[in-house]
Image (cartoon, rainbow, N blue to C red; front, side, top):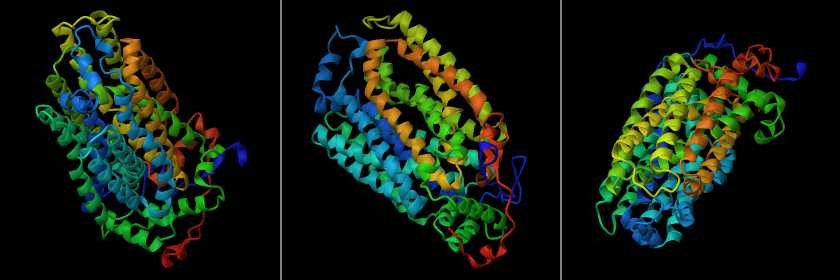
Length: 525
């Protein structure tokens, strides 16, 4: 390859990064399909947040973790270490470990059966896992149920963001893809509301918390049947006529879909020239920027500290002196803040761009983490044996809310947007699988270790994340090009113009038009 770099095709629909010849109409089909696909985030968010309330819910602890009840009732217990239990964290983290393996399998499955069918598989796993958790009579049933939920997360988190990015109009792709993260936070909000009520029910309140997840699982399982598969996925599987029909259904019956369909077919043909598999191909030199982003975007997402704040917010509030019920109420407040901030991000991401929101969010996260480090260090100290004065406890709540807002306008939605839009079609499933499996692996490690880390490092846990926020913001400024408004099958242009990545990615000359392929619906793969 000339210059030592790879060559990626770019379609005629791109000029200086601006879509041309593509329909930007927002149709009813696009809206409903995106809402249904993004609903996978609803159950993921519910399963993330429901455990945060369960892990300090007395009825749940009495049924499965009586040793923690003894520590809660002990006046001498270090506040940092009350919930330090490997069995408890195994219950929480088993979902993420199962999700890692499911993601790797889902990449191959999604490529073979399509994005929509992969989401249907995920919804089925959600239903089975929710039923097992609700009916659990011992810790083994709880963990097995969480494993099924992990399989569900692996399939839906791999396929849904890619589906959203592929069917959304290029002009509004950031907003539509961010719906997944918005629904994820809706699920978290609903989970905290359910926990707030279930916490007042002695004996069986925890079953209500786990059982409610059955309802959205059924809705998504039924609803996914009625949405079209993405035209990109159909072309990749050689179904060009079906892809044209899907594209017309998505863009509207009067839209001219030829330019977009040609670009999709060109991207599929480019991938068909390679004999190696997608996972092996993404390691090649021309995909170096995509590989780096597939690794570092989920890595930095986890190192913001948001996952542990989200999962353990009720425990965090409990640690600073709130009652169990008020701790869950504090989580509800942060959920409202999160939903508001994600809405702001959805309205801003296609106007101000991805890089601007990353930088703004990074500054907010850094201020909040430094503030929490100082307050926890000054007021709880290193032994956690004294109660935090009320004004400082209120300040912690305010900082957590501001932290959630900063995350909600930046890393929260952008973690889903960037990986779903930057990969070429031939490695898109593999890239998204790799990105999500790394994310779930790190989530597993953090959920398995955070309570022990909080017990050992005390307030230093927040300083640790603050240092990483500095590193990740610098990385974004230096290495992530702006991708707003660029058609998804023409993303090679932004890498070829970047100051660093242009040495790896070079654009292939545009091939001569081939109208006969569009006419007869055939595709050489």
